[in-house]
Length: 294
Length: 313
Image 1 (cartoon, rainbow over the protein chains, first blue to last red):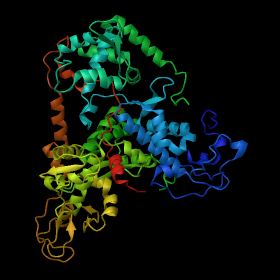
Image 2: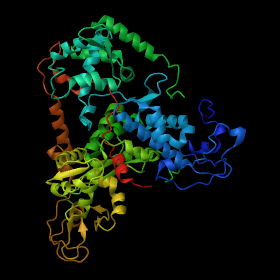
Image 3: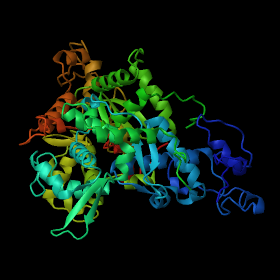
Image 4: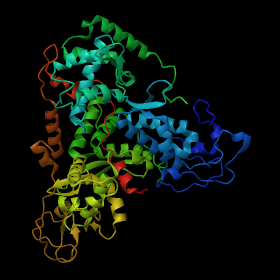
């Protein structure tokens, strides 16, 4: 396990250190490593043996003994792979498991996993404006959250018109919040029926609304869907999922609901108070940084 | 690739929003790229002078370099429209996860690609492609399903269908290097720009080929076009040089038309309405304040890397 002094880039890393700075700092390596040509062919064949670099004994007990030092180019490529992996995986809106990251991308580099992930997170934030966050504390699964706010005019310039389902999601999220953060499935359908959305009928835009709400949104962690015990016929309750809290907020949802009704959020005092309190708790600094917990 | 020697540009929210939205397209015509750039400035930096597009893109590319991605500029083969596509510059085993396509689907694309490259016109007929369905790797595919898969490729802007199938400009931008390396004998090159040529015009005497936009530029205001190689009379109609101004006059670019059509389709009134009388048209995505990460349907580059194991530096 690498020794991590806060930033994890302390001197104990030695020769790997030189590759990490984003602006391509070309300090001479401390170890005796030949600068190799970039190997952009296969990311997984990145490791190489350098004389004397392996098994550094007790002083370097934290470095993986059988893995030699890697060149800056190899590390850069590994981070690039990781960034692409995270982007691709998040595209499907399924939380990315740490084990998958290890298995599919990091591989031989698992000794520096945390550093790689941190660097990837930095790149994602700096280049794309996406924040890598853990879905729930200690869950070891991640999602990407957009740090740029949505703007109505974005819709005109977007390429993928294929997510009209977000509209349905917003309605359901709004319903849940306005009804006190939990709602019965039967109540959801009672409401959606008025919009021409039925659990059993195929919808022109949403396709299979029942599947969307009770399966897809749940899998994407926007909603939680739980069986209510002792109900006959069986009923389920719907609540906000962890992704919802990360991607939006009570206040934003309340504003959305208010907009649809052409009213002011303050017209719902109870919900407004709750949303305000939520805003305040968000404004407080987070106890742990955005970096993934090791 | 010495990324360290060139100082990378600075990303601001203008650039980030641009990149995010660019990723939702994968490939865009220049007109739309300018529009997108303008939109991003409007959102984040209303008063700033907009950077020249070329510099703007170069700035972003210098930052993307370390991620082995690039916004590449090219030109459509049929009418010379400038296009921009997000391409991958390195092969990664990661890409194997990227694709939404099964092994047999990817192999179908490979087969179509080979037919297109081998053909004289740069087009492959549906019939000829579908006849190869039995030879595909992976699960057995019926011809009917193959037709659907081909349509998927068209929707994802990897193929263009104009009666027959040819490569989308995006595919050409992404795969030129790979194609030239893999099919060195079959590949056609334009006599003027020396880039990969899929469709174009050829001299009937000596056989040299030129892209349609290259022909247009080369023979512009030349009443007696002659082959640059053998000087024989050029037997084909010389197309017009692409004029972005003319495009602006008609007010609408090709891709823009598609966008509007899709948006119109989304706003379908439902039977009921929300309390307060607002029709369900408000349910279109514009109202959503959940702003998930834009769906990166454009990760075409990863697809390419996946099936072809492209090895580029």
